[in-house]
Length: 101
Picture 1 (cartoon, one colour):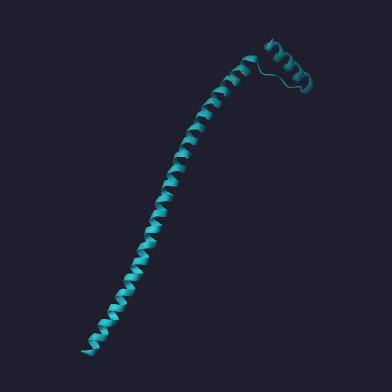
Picture 2: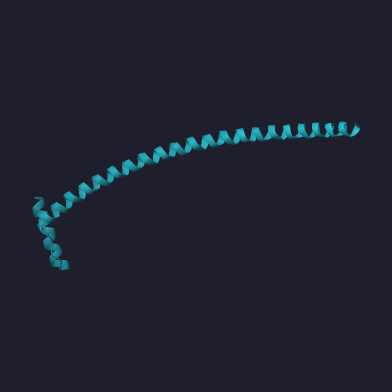
């Protein structure tokens, strides 16, 4: 039945468009090859999706690490500011004492 339908479709195509249809075996080979290629490409897509998900997770981890580092840097900067102010006050006091002597 399928072969008959393909033959009929090919005959119609030839009469209407003046195109010659390839042999049925060629069409079957093309279909088989196309399905194999589709399966290979589907597997490749799945592999690449898995890699993308893995990299997305890694990016999220790194973003969290950066956020922690930024918070620690902010805290350290605040401590350094307080220490610098305390040092400046002590230095000023020491200079005043030295000037008195």
